[in-house]
Length: 209
Image (cartoon, rainbow, N blue to C red):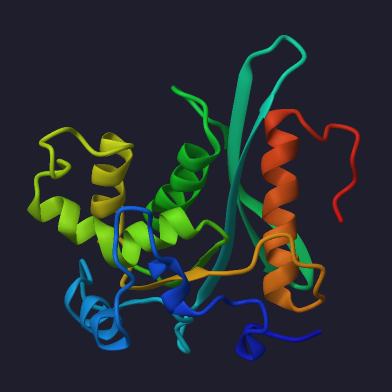
């Protein structure tokens, strides 16, 4: 089994700087400047910490039930002694969406990692992009858009900003979603996806892959 050091399923840190419909694509130097200047705290990385004592994989999901309502859930998993264990998994409270579930998973992982050196993996470009690029900009703007309106998921983003301060050192890493690879990162992402869906009630009869 390959370890995290091989990193075949880690997306480039610049992938979450992809062009948005309302943005011009940043140049390479602009990307480097953003990553250098916009970190919300010291010891925040987009690539795995080499001295991490904790490796957690997060995911969230949302689906429409037979009753026509939305149900979302999130999960945090880790590997211990070659076995996968659930760190925490819950149904999402409040408005139901996959983005909110992905956010909640990372927020809870950060809170649980208080005082630790932790690598947190997520396949959500939205969440990882918020951590490494947009969050500090939103903080400076009072969590308001250019038009003076509250940003999307304002409360969760405020909570994310606070939670990022909890670990001693932290890397929030964008990994590939739904990879069929056999390395630890691909397996961790699949396990987190499975537990999130199981918690939401989507895979009650499924077996953990």
